[in-house]
Amino acid sequence: METAIPYYWKSMDWDRFMADYPPPPMFQKTTGRLSADALRALQNERFMARVAEAWHIPFYRERWGAAGLEPGDIRSLDDLAKIPSFNSDDLRQAAVAQPPFGNHHPFGREGLGTMPLKLQTSSGTTGIPRVTLFDPMAWEVQGVQAARAFYAQGARPGDVVQITYTNSLANASWNAFTGLYHWMGCVPVTAGSGNVTPTEKQLEYAKAFGVNWWFSRGEYLGRLAEVAAAEKFDLHQLKTRFLHSYLGPDAEGAVRKRLEDAWGCPVYDNYGTHEIGLCSFECTAKDRKHLSEDTVYVETTDVDTGAPLPSGEKGSLVFTSLHRSVPPFIRYDLRDVMILYEREECACGLCTRKLSQFLGRADEMVKLRGTNVFPVTCQSAISKDSRTTGDYICVAYFAGEGLGRREEITVRIERRSPDVDSDALMKDMERALFKDLGVKVGVEIVEAGSLAELTRTGKGDKSRRLLDLRKGK
Image (cartoon, rainbow, N blue to C red; front, side, top):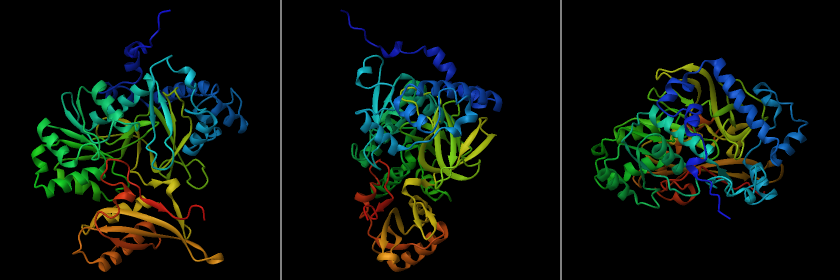
């Protein structure tokens, strides 16, 4: 019997795909500028298709049934709040229920070979990595999302682009590669993180290959600048046009300014996740981050209660993917804290809802004397003080015994050199952090480089900002 092979390039009607999910520059003229009514109709059509698919998947059928829902109860996006949300902990439970992929996927190993599939996992920085399968639709839409961001920031065909994430089970580098190679006509330089290609070599390659811009985390761009200074390598000789990055909670722009001064070019902030893709991006106006609203529907909910919030209020992001069938993601609470804004026409010509800068992780929040403290909120005060390296970690612990036991936080901060007065820096940091956090925390000054193993900074991966010593107590 002849083997039937599911060839990738026959897996979709590509002309139809490009019409449904326009890559740049078509996006700027079509779904990136839809009227509110036209966009709502498009989102609703795609949402209802995903709901119909989800009823056939055990994960959703069981959760929705337990919430009292039956097929037909969800008739439009207006009913979205009736659907219970879920988070990454629920996905880990799903993997236990149906290994190895989880019962939130439409099939297990028996479905492999029926279509092209790519297996990716989360970074695993907050637990066991989550497995997610990508069919061609999911894979290419995330590539289109990325290409939209790149184009809005100034990327053009022929650009040579250095990627400092590693092509691994994690998704970021693959996402960038697909966007550049399939949908932008750019040349990806997949250098990987500093663990794969030493930082000194990264700079040499950028000069040798004429790299036009970089896809990299803010922390690693800072590390590149430090190494360049130590090696007397002039970053400005690279003639970098811009940096595509993820700046975290840079409320006052200190991280951005430091990077822009060092590199001599604009830095653009972006937002994406393993499951949802690079769905939100700054344009050259740098006025918050556009959403690719034909691919995702976004809500914000109260961190403590889970109640939906109106636009303009800080809350946990809840995403519904409008294109993913393998697997669907409907009301996925990412526990990333941001602000969602109403639609508006931007100076760049796009008309979308926007997201604020990243404000913290709800699952890393510490309740300190009645105040919600997000460790990443410390970044702004620490980064803008030139006496620090910018690296830090918040240590959460219990102090006292019995009825007097209380939660406390000490922030360990690296000083740039032994010449920095530790006592003066500690007192200044205590005042600055109290202003930003709204509650007093302890500060401990440590030596440069001493936190690297705890925070993972400079390795091209996500930096860890919370060391929680309260667990199990």
